[in-house]
Image (tube, rainbow, N blue to C red; front, side, top):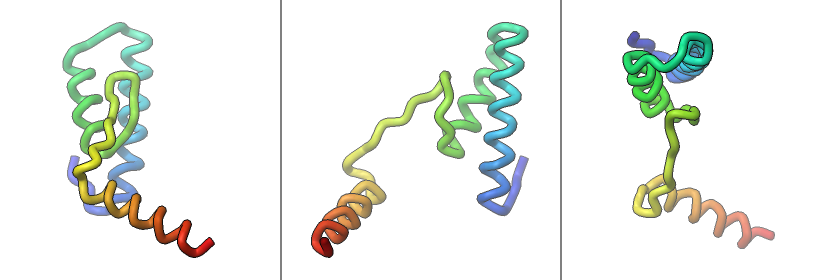
Length: 76
């Protein structure tokens, strides 16, 4: 499903992931549903029992967080 608004896309993905988890809880493991859940969770950054995320210090966004933290402490 292609949704152009990032907020709506993440909201939809979060709801779909919740539906999939409910179905897996009720009916048991289904590889097709698990694959869909992992794909959605990975694409939209949703933490689930089937996914985990690691911080990579080489990523640019991590460097921005570190820079923002330094600036915040400099202003104190």
